[in-house]
Length: 143
Image 1 (cartoon, rainbow, N blue to C red):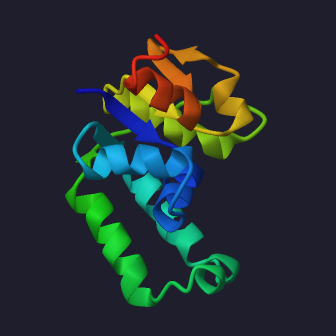
Image 2: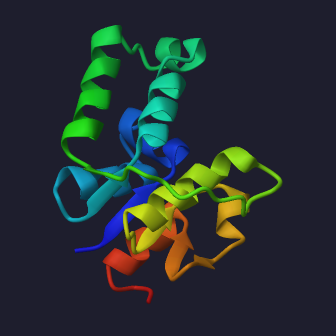
């Protein structure tokens, strides 16, 4: 089973929308087709993004909805602690935690829509792919 780190924007998009490739990736996690690797940085960013007023209002999220999502992330993912200090992405240093989570969690894939991450293609043996590319890999349409 593939071990994946799902970048927070893809994760949140897949949780709050009911269609598209991010949704399909999140469904793979929810049906245990993949192992989701997270870290405290992932959890904190997800909670922060879900609490943005424009997100909460647009998707009618309550505090209980957000607590439920965060609880599921914690409960149903493999938590990576002791993240290595990485300074690979200079243009957007906040993206480095995604790489660190993947390295610490021995991920096979990083699934992201972030150009800075995608430009790496592969980082320490970990493939960096879009949600669409990952879905194609899982469907056998791509290697």
